Amino acid sequence: MALKPLNDFRYMSFDVVGTLIDFEGGLVGSLTDIGRDHGVEVNAARALDLYRSARYMPDVGHFPDDLIRVYKVIAPDLDLPATEELGQRLRDSVPGWKAFPDAAAAMAKLKTKYRLIAMTNAQRWAFEHFSAALGHPFHAAFTVDDAGTEKPDPAFFHKVFEFVATEGATKDDILHVAQSQYHDIGVSRDLGMTNCWIQRRHAQKGYGGTIEPKEFTKPDYHFTSMAELAAAAVG
Image (tube, rainbow, N blue to C red):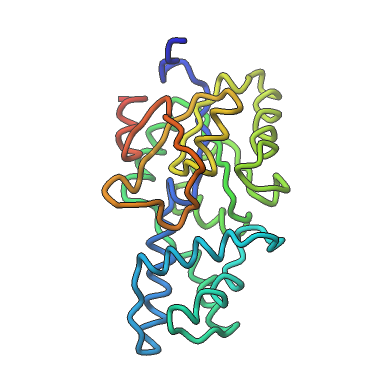
């Protein structure tokens, strides 16, 4: 089947944290600050490995926005005090996590041509900060609170399908854009969507703070930045 041209989509749906917001930079930056205050040098790669393991512990029963729990799990392995107060400090750093340098301008450009939908495993309170950092570009937004589940659960995607149906559209009208193979690219392929992989870690090894997929999914579209996508889709 021929690849659908970018001009033919009415919507673009976006993973937010990791694709548009530099969560790895924000997370490591906060842990580094905590370490500095306690005379500890935090290794970035080690911190992301520990975060990934703690974030995806089985049977935790939390939505992903549980940074206090995660901090207390990983702190001993980073030689940091595993206190509630410092866990709260990590969580409180979230509003300051920055957008990738190209993200806001790319979203502003894309907004002129497409209806943009956020699909994020962040909670609503965190998403509102992220949306502000991006210039509030979204036509609609679905957080983990709204969906009652988190990606890669197909139920999250079906919430978006139901929404666009109210505007006379289908999943075929959506290009799903994300950096996470595990949370987005694989499941969007399984659901019959056209997808676009923003490979933020193209110059780095491994999957960083994101869980490694069981198998790699070749995306329909592939860029290493949001600027590249905006240039291809809008010009």
